[in-house]
Image (cartoon, rainbow, N blue to C red):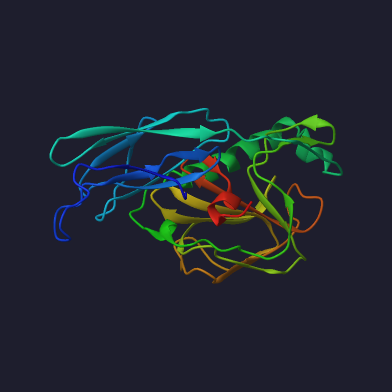
Length: 268
């Protein structure tokens, strides 16, 4: 988020004058989380959704893995003046990743198991629709666990020779039982120790539709509605669900848009 597009009618205002700046990055990557600034009390929309605006004018949204751009953000200020901000999208390369040794029943499940998977995934998707006024997403995110990155966001995956959905997060290899810490503050919106595909599954809502999801956990140490602080121990690494070994899968979402945790961390 280092390169910014600034739209302003009066940059030279006195310090106590009304802030009319509209600030967004001039370009961003596929899978990114975009934070912008608009005049307080503005109405902002992107991709058919009205964005929540903080009292000081911050807005946030996510850019999908396959978004081509340019993005268009409509801003209507309190004085009825309107601007449309356009952001160029930088395309990324998505290598193919082969994952072998996955339990066959998790790759090609029988009908009754497929129905269970659909129910469980719908339950997780539902909590990602929260639009709390919390502003925890503005914290500088930290890694939930240290370790080697064993899987990267967005890569096309082939499980036991069968094509699957692109990888939805960042995998960090770590020993079973390693503590998982909250990458940013938030409220626990989902916790279940036994989902079929993802095993121990935990979701923390950071506000404005931004959430973190942690998969394959061996233990969950918090409960739904718990408020957690950045750095707090929330769970332990495991290999539950569809996993070939102990690791933490950390995914991030803006509502139903999956975003890349490594970009949020600001790491290559």
